[in-house]
Image (cartoon, rainbow, N blue to C red; front, side, top):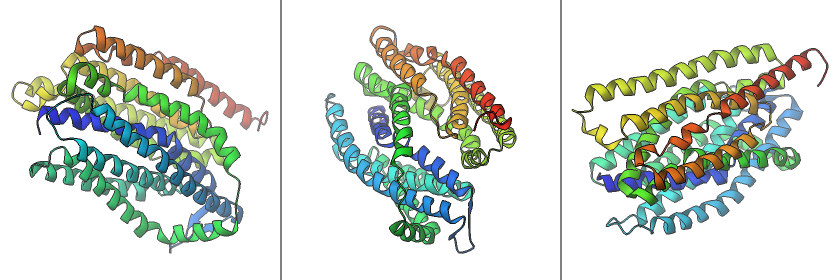
Length: 408
């Protein structure tokens, strides 16, 4: 794959990340709401749900609500992403036929969003191990498909084809593992309807603001680099961010693995168990990202003059800015998981300010500074760590008040 194709590859992924405007925190809410209801339920050997009837009815009703919401969002947002992405990519007159690959990738993105929401629902039903196993297998299939497509010269087509494989494999696993559960929930929800809208709408708009802000915090760099510095440099930005994002995703598995359990403990008011579980996995998360990033720089200074791959990524100064930024972001992410498990979004205002700050400073950095300083604005916004810590301490104080019976 040429450096030009690499640039379009990562510009594709950044534009498709606008699917965040379809999600708007929805998949997180799905996991949380499912976990709070499942705290009083269990799976039988035949993978049918058993337990408190009221919570089973509520969970079934929420499942139907989720499906209806998915249908509406996918039919509105993804066509807009497809068309908008086409016109944005058209601003560069490079000699590369990207139109069909973009169509395939944007269509697959819609399917991936649907499967992600369904997996989040069942993950909330205390099926973390099973869902993580599915995601691992799907990831392996997607990676193998990507490598195979690149090996036979499909190049930029590999991105969309691999994501299509992701959708098909994850869909197959969902049907195979949860068909009995889906059938049961759908039948129950046909007879029982709970109005989820007041509770859902009170939270979704706050998540929506935070998630939209997140696009400008984490995904704005590649399009801006594409606009000001061309496809080749945006490719370096894209692959470098992808590396750090992968490292953070690996580190965050310590937290995502306990998200359903945290929600269940909060539903049962078990604060001490909650904090013990959270603190243990917070340290694991931070240690993973620190060691993973450190390993990259060791390999870079050892092999950069012998391995051509390092010519396709950003120089050490810029990568160092990303390293420090993502260490801080991993801590913020972990605390955000903890806070949002209470069915709240106390970080909305911080997300708005950070999104505006990063978007504006990145624009001016790209326009007036050398390319390697593109992430100065991203790094400079981590004063938010202090504010997030204060919100976290306030939440823990509220736990003490609840335990003492002062508030409910």
